[in-house]
Length: 256
Image (cartoon, rainbow, N blue to C red; front, side):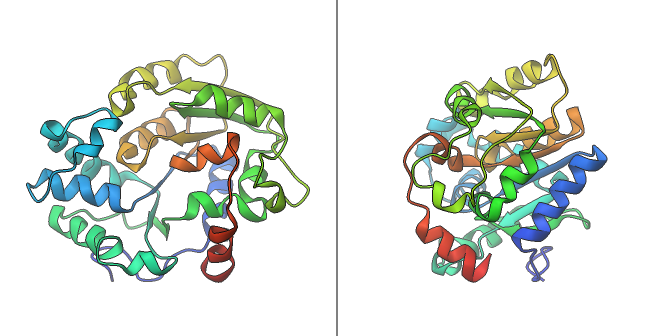
């Protein structure tokens, strides 16, 4: 037992199955992937280190305590919680161990029925058609600071440079796609929820690109529309810019 997190973690197929069940049964299901950024927030809020780079996400070093408390409150509400596991970096002191101890420091435990996955799940879902299978013929909501670019890429239905090799002859065939701009980083969460509540149609699935420090947003969107919300983070950039996923694909084949 890793402080409330089972040692046995779900593989990508199990995670995809949970998401598919949520779509079929129209149930809320929030997925977040945590790593060094989340541990930085939690450690820093206790006064152990300053992480000024977080200002790019809509808050300054001085008010990081509120963000950490928000994150700590949201993690136990998430349905799929992903932690560092794949690759050599996962076991490095500043990655998996640091995050694990940050959870211990804050006394954060997942809910008993939570599925525990790998922190690279957002990348792994791109391989073997997991993600586009979930999206096929579904109404998809995209929430990120680059919503317009991501929606255009999805509606283009052509694999971006670097991902074509892994598409297996398939690509995005969603029924409908709309985007919500997440402005000002986490500071835009409130307006994002207002916009999500005013959609002209009910989405089947939400792709969120805000970093898992926005776990509260994933939980709220999932509950609002009784749908799965997948926090993809930086993976969104793969949709509209050239990428080289070969290294992560190798990890997926070995450990995913």
